[in-house]
Length: 295
Image (cartoon, rainbow, N blue to C red; front, side, top):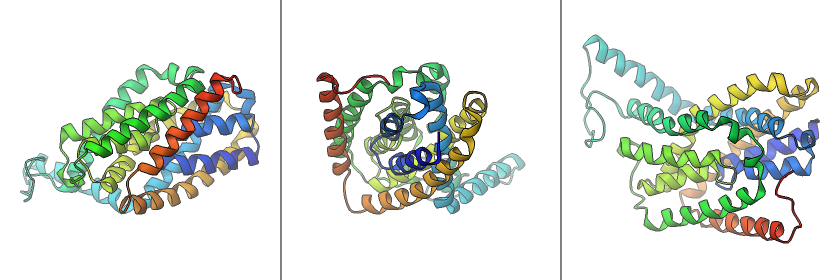
């Protein structure tokens, strides 16, 4: 991988990780277009996972105050519980323990919501990293499938809850939706925003919780792949990979800002339409033999 390939991948990753149009699906096309590693699926997967660390950094920077408040409150509330000095917070709405603050409760929701993707990711790690998940038939189908589910969520979701009103079941609904992100073409943000809408969250709230929920999954997969990448990527890859990761972080930060601002005023309809059109084009080109399902 050279610097130009890395910059292209970084831009694609940064744009598509947070906008609900499937980062992996677009990265597969980008890797084909740039002939990355001659199409080696394990090396491509490792590169994608490492570049994701750039977008993870974007989440940490953008939500720095939220992450700090959640972390501090989580430690303080649980220390107070253990030491017998627990506080009583008002306005629990019956969804969180009275001794736990709103920020501390969000910390638990993130932990609970991360369990499904962690279990499935570990159980099917080899399949996720293999050639099957780079298959364009699968990517095209998932682009359309998740688009239809997102449209259904937009239609039936009540869209009235804030994060402070989320309960355990709501977190599990979003967390189980995140499992779809393990399949290329689904989109992590698209799947989790969809789950949030099904759980009754407002659009912007669904996106915010989606981004916070990404932190454990992307951190775990990125660091694991970073360790494995030392053994499977060529030695001359690391400087371009660093460049691509930085680019993905910068572009990702801008993408977060754009999507949150967009969802305050508009629905996800434009992304649904884009996914259906792109997925349809991919499937038609595959059917006509213009594209090969695999690299």
